[in-house]
Length: 287
Image (tube, rainbow, N blue to C red; front, side, top):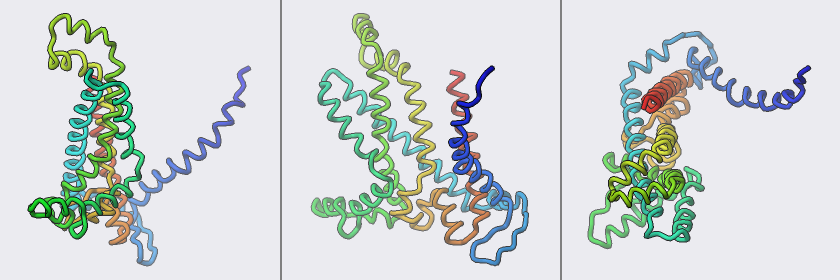
């Protein structure tokens, strides 16, 4: 007779998952279907999909949704390009194994820092009054911009912060993928007279494609949820130039006290993330 006693040891973990994962998920769905507004007398009333319809008609929400996806796409594209270039460089023959290990040790440092700390660091570096970047620009006789106070540069600034911190993720993953390719393939390609571009196109790229796909999906979802950089630098401004969805939900819940509406906005956003991720996986799976 089969004993089920080993499964009893899973009960604490299952309870923890329910309390920290499933219950908040169900409760947030419940909040999105009622009319709770912080700061007002508690009068619970079921409103159904009213908050969802309100969000769909909210031009500010739609604008922030497009801005968030634009931000994530730009960040991931730049991280992929920089990460791929760095990985190909440090795995080439001109770089020794010792130098490669030193480079990877240095590049992994940004990943170890909390996002809030990195945001505060760049807030100081790009400060209009005493920032290092503006000081160098002034010394060179160039006009120093207000990085976080101008709509045209504020968005680029938070993109810069994201790219600086998370490019290392691509570097580590792609470097590992490149080093796992058998050297016999490169030797055979060299004998056949293949050049660097042909070698990359027909050997390197096909082998590292799964790693690229995983890194792109992982970082794309991470950039979509970006909150820390905005919270410590621009607060969504100037205007709504850097107001990502994550910050918009915070604004709705804790500045306008519309808890139910902010929860509905978050649910719609998460559903769009889920649909997009499934579509990307389906497209790649077919290939």
